[in-house]
Length: 262
Image (cartoon, rainbow, N blue to C red):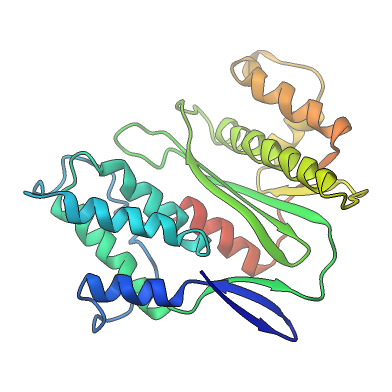
């Protein structure tokens, strides 16, 4: 981990680690690319391609990329996605991992910046890739949280059940993010940092926001009652305010990369 200090703030990054990773893979001279994954392909099938004779190099590379995501949230989705094929990786999955290295070469000094001029208000953004896995049609939830202008928490996670609608999947993503918001508020409290304002969370689904605001359960929402109870209980207790997504381009790109939108 490297730390660069300036009069504007602090940058956490892993440039040397990334260079060592490229050198080990023999890709220091590779051509950079602008995205870490070809989203239309998504490398979803464990049966695609030719199985690797020795999967050890692939597993080692994915393990090192997972460590790199500590300061590179833009890699979270693609690295997490490829980590699902550690048991039986193929040449296609290995090519996907090498594409991440090419993307890494073009953004070798990127990291997380903590601005010296920033308030201590928490805001979050949620999104998902609905039915993004063709083999199971499960969705991927993603969220990121900012403390002022600084990114402090992010996650990309495949949902455990198949969502029948976009709203259902979006609401489950909101529930996952609400859990993280709760933990962040408890952390600030333990650090004796006051946070009197509600946590504002943005999503881009009007129906999911209406479900969160409606205290009456309906037949069509029975299957997500656990998530409904959690999100609604969080509102008066934390509190959390849910809003429609009107985010800046930078925030939208962050959450977009976490879920691997197309």
